[in-house]
Length: 178
Image (cartoon, rainbow, N blue to C red; front, side, top):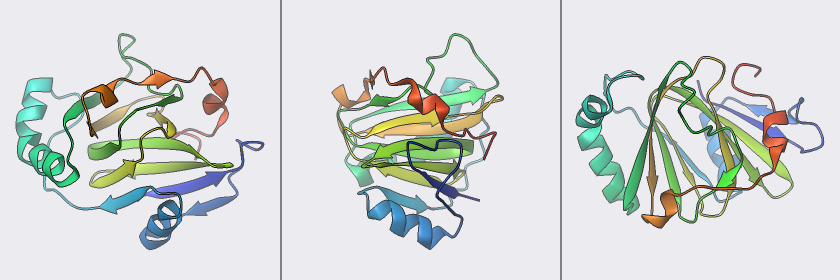
């Protein structure tokens, strides 16, 4: 089940609002220019699958999303357990292109700093979050990551994350605390 938690930055340990109804999540995020969709895809590939095998399994779905959203580049987020060699996506960053975050299997929590609030979206299999370029964001995978997601971008340059250096993202409740 998808969950949207809305925080004021001064109280990262206590959400002001928690929404679980899909239409409420869609409407609340839309007010901030973020699109949220749940669409089943029938893919049966699990996090931790070898990258080539995962991409082969997702190819048709990936191509459909790339075409539908006009994306030019993508990154596969594929985690099953901790891997010290992986870049820490928990640090706040921005991308210079729109991002489509599509969960293939498992789950991830995407934090978005929009206006004077932080919107934390728990995304699960079939969820798709479309985040405008320049939005400050982070991805929380928890103590035991289990997520296979496609991160699509409107341009090749948009793939490169620019880290803000703001460490307050780590103060907000993560996937294991909500």
